[in-house]
Image (cartoon, each protein chain N blue to C red):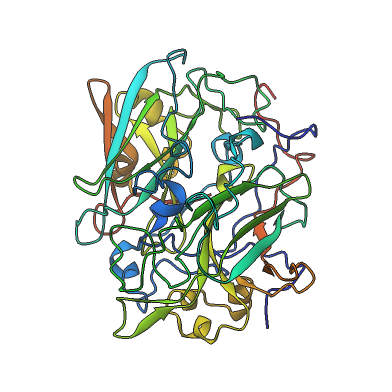
Length: 249
Length: 204
């Protein structure tokens, strides 16, 4: 692990999380949350050094095909089946500043809506050339990109006839462990987004819209792959100018 | 409408779902050959300074059923109380200790387990030393936003008694929900997501 920037690292605490913007823990329409949701109030803790620090991952750990899901599990000379797409965007913080060196890990179903997982029982076919995972680290402008196939929607046991809209899961590390985030990206124009009990755990429509990636015609590569843009915003960080100094700092 | 270009609200969290292993620990779920190994499986090497310990625990839901499809991540200081992070300005952490680990809860017995070292003490914001602790973050199907808590150590009773965070827990019987019990070099803690033994979770 190493820093990838010459800039002086920031050490301020993070902006308080706007819990009303996120889903509450208990969302009965998403049934699994009923027994997995804490009922007591969270204990508030303005970040200490244990939360404002976090692991950093070097670009050197990223393999050449890590951000190419079409090929990173495929047999030589073959590729995954499906609509070829590029997903790209920036990781910013709430201040609008790029988060450089952020590790993104993504995972998804194949083009037919089938995950490569032993707990998955959907009858859609496995694609022998598609694993479903990838990762990238943002550059100095906070940018990332990966190539994949558009995942299919799939049915899941919640309501009698619930389907997940096509989506890609994202896991994000910023610069502090308090910024740790897992979320899902959806695709512009998918009418199933608004029927999904997991999407609808989020109370504010504007927050849901923040998870919908627009088709990015400009970045689309002719005769090759369409592009979708997905920016991710992590918690912002306070200036340390007026903060009490930590002992030894 | 779609995502706005310059919106500066935090991206809302969504559940990690049942197939989180594909993304975070692909080798664990038999997706081999994409990455050399799963991230976060090795926190120490044979040069790491400090007392070797094992930290393990289970996650139970509100019906006391094991949560076998979760991922636990931990973040901790080295044996001298320094974090292996660019934001650590007090000194340089042990280069042979990552400080970060990731482990799925086992599909059979429900345990997550980390081979690590006992962390040193680090200061609270006002300079008081906190008791040695590990930051724990849990995601799983049914959890809409990752849960933060801490793991303290049962053999640090004196330090725990004056820990600035533990002192703020109003219902004193809940303090023990954050204290792992020592048996030899192994510390064990059950995390209860809900119910009378509910773990103290943090809004950090």
